[in-house]
Amino acid sequence: MIQCRLRELMAAKSRRERRKITYDDVRFQTGMSKTTLTRLANDRSEGVSFSVMDRLCTYLECQPGDLFIQSEEPQNQ
Image 1: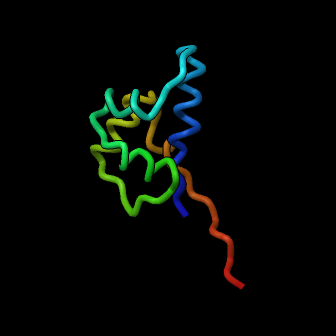
Image 2: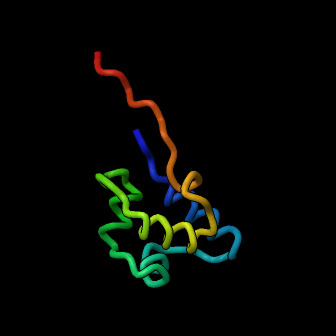
């Protein structure tokens, strides 16, 4: 399962800049919709375009591998 670390990276940016970073801040700076951001933050997105990844990585000052991680899904028994 691919997971998005958007919340963690927003928190890290908040600490670096010593101010609270909100979804509205990200939305304003990246031009992305709040729906897209909340779907990513809650791991509900079915896919992500390169332009979305590029805008988020630029804003959060990270690489795509920092934004997304792969974890094993629990096995159905």
